Structures are given as structure tokens and as C-alpha cells.
Length: 504
Image (cartoon, rainbow, N blue to C red; front, side, top):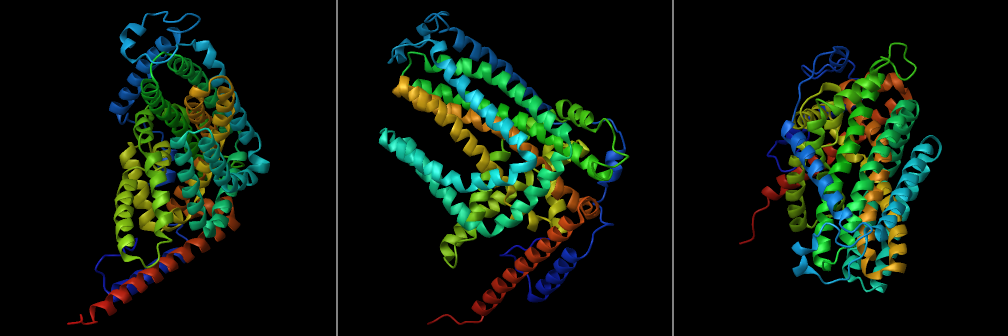
């Protein structure tokens, strides 16, 4: 039951809404269940799941097979022999550079894979003892790192990349300033999510296994990318090919990360229902059931959601940060509010909490996203979700890992081929982000599971950690009161403006 700022509600209705919100935030919703979605009943009933979003599953498999074939051709064409497969006859009009060999550039991508893997494994190994400290470092260092890289790009006369990284540093700084008051609560949620994951080593083993799968695919992907960098095409042609390959790699990496998300969240919810990791009634095959569902009936939904959720989430974080710092500039506020409500509509159908619903209930992606968002709105938990910045903090760690990976490969490439350093550095950065993201998504899965469990049945969280339950309930109460007071101020101001006569 959210308040929409520009709805024509009366002050009487507003007061009633404030009372209801206050009651929702104070009470324990132990008896609350959404109609037809009793989480305990659904998980305990082993029903045969239906396949969903088969079109997107087929599209993903087709692009994976097609791209794998293309990558092998591109890499083999210049492996140990220039133009081995005589592909240059189709690109002779675009030849502007001296051709190289695939093996000249492949080791640079091997460095990127090694650095990204080390960073990802280090994150998982330090998850229990240093995770929060690592997140804090990511938040504070990322702005500086982006600014330094921007200066180096300008020094190397790469003005496009210099401007891009400068804009990134400015946006990162503005975002941190806008959400600085939310970070204590965010770190609390992340700390509890780390605790939840660390008590279940099976989930960490899933992340290690998927990281190995990602590495195998990246070995083939980097083989083809090295063949593109080594080609004799002009910079424009090579950049376009690398962009196409990068989009495919991003989608593949997002699918693998979100598969982990479904597996981990499905397992964590089952464990929470059965009393935590020490519960005697925990099903021994919880992780295997989640793995089976994620790789079969729910895989199409994962492929579908992976195309859109990351971009929409990032846009939503930035708009929320800007919106909170606009002040009384009515023109700018109106424009940002338009974008805000547009993105909020998209979030209703594309959000990361859908993956928990997919893992637990086996629904289609759009239905899962819609049900999760309606659940948050009907219970008021959306106020907590909007206040929490854990997803943004984890994304900062992922970007920092990618920047470190790209820097290592880019610097080596600069010392050997300065004209191709930024091609290698930018694609290596994407590889590093995906490898680190595989580790980060484990914690993000725990965060989403916490909010879904709290919205479905707060007693699940209270039974798991009573102190955390009290803290999160108090924060929810404060956020709902804050929203009520802001809505009252807006409506009171509108009421006064309506009674002030216009000057003749």
C-alpha cells in the first residue's frame, strides 16, 4: 500500500493510510499469507513443475551454439597461421591494419581470466571474516579508481574513454553522497546475508562449480575475441565485432549468475522454513532440487530475465539517488518523477526478487516479478527494499573487480601494442566483472531471500535471528512514517496552493 505523490487523495484518506501503515510496521505478521502462495505449503508439496518462457530458452541456446561456432572460426582463422580459413576475402574492403596471430593476444585474456578468478575465489574464501570490510573498501575506492583511470586515458590521448570514466566517477560520487545515510542499514543486511550463506557451505560449492563453467566458456570466447583483435580489419570493424561478442558474453554471464541466484535463494528459503541450518527437518536434497529446477523447467525464465533486469536496476538506483537530492526545483523534479514512475512500472515486471519466486514456486519470470512486487507493496516491505542499497554496493564490488582485471590486461597490452590496448582492456574488464559477479551473486541471493521471507512470514526471520528481526522491523516502521510525513507535507502544500488566488 504505497502512497503515490500525485494521486488526488483527501487528507482524511491520508490520515487513514498513515494509521494503517503504522499498524503494518509495528505488528508481527505471523498469520499473514498471500492468497494461494503459502510459502510453507508450496515448498512442502512436491508438485511437477511446468516449463516456462521456452521462447527465450530456445533463443539463448541458439545464440550460444551459433556464437560458439563463430568464435571457433574467428580464433582458428589466425591460429599459428594468418588467414588459415581464408576469411579475409570477405573483409578485404575493410583491411586497414597489419594482421597478427590469435596466440599473440590470447595470453592477455588468460591473464584477465586468472585475475578475475583469483578475485572471485578470494571473495568467497574471505566471505565469513572480511566480507563487510571488502564491501566498504569497494564503496570508497571505486570513485578514486575511476578518476585515476580517466586521467590515464586522457594522458594516453584516449579522450572517449577518459570522458567515459570521468562521467562514471562523477555518477559514483553523486550516488554515494545521495545514499550515505542508508549505508549503515545496508551493511547490516549484508552482514546477515553473509551469515546466512556462510552457514551453508553447499551454496559456496555451487558458486565454485559455476565459476569453473564460466571459465570454460571464457576460454572459447577469448579465443575468438583474440582472433578479432588480431584481424586486419580497421578499428571500426573490430570494435563492432567486439561489441557484439561482449553483448553475448554479458547475456551468458548474466544467465549463469542468475542461475546461481535461483539455486541459492531456493535453497535458503527451504532452509529458513525448516528452522535454519541446524534444523532437524531440513531436506537433504534441497540444493539438488534447486539445481534441477534451475537447469530445467525454470531455465527459460532465467534467460528471459537476464536480458533486462541488470539495466533496469542500475537505472532505478541512479534515478532514486538523483530524486532524493533535487530539493525544490519543481521543473527538474517533474522530469525526474516522470522517469521514476516509468522505471517503477518496468521494475514491476523485471526485478531480481523474481528469481526467489522462480526458485521456490517455479513460476514464469513476469508472473514471479509481478507477484514479488505486489507482495512487497501489500505488506509495506517495498519501503525497506527501496531504502536498502545492498545491490548497488555489491555492484560496486563487481565493477571494481572488473576494473582491476581490465587494468592488468590493458597495461600489458599497452606495453606491446598500444593501439590495441583499450580493445583488450575493455573486454577483459567485462570478463573480470562476470567472474567476480559469480561470487557476489551468492550474497545478493541471500539478501533477496531475506526480504521475500520477511514479506511472506516475518516469523521465519524472527526464528532465525530475533535481534535482526527487531532491527529490520524498526527500520520499516521508520521508513513508513517518513513516507507518510512526506505525503502529508505534499498534500498540505497542494491544499494551500489551491486556496491562494492568482494575481490579476
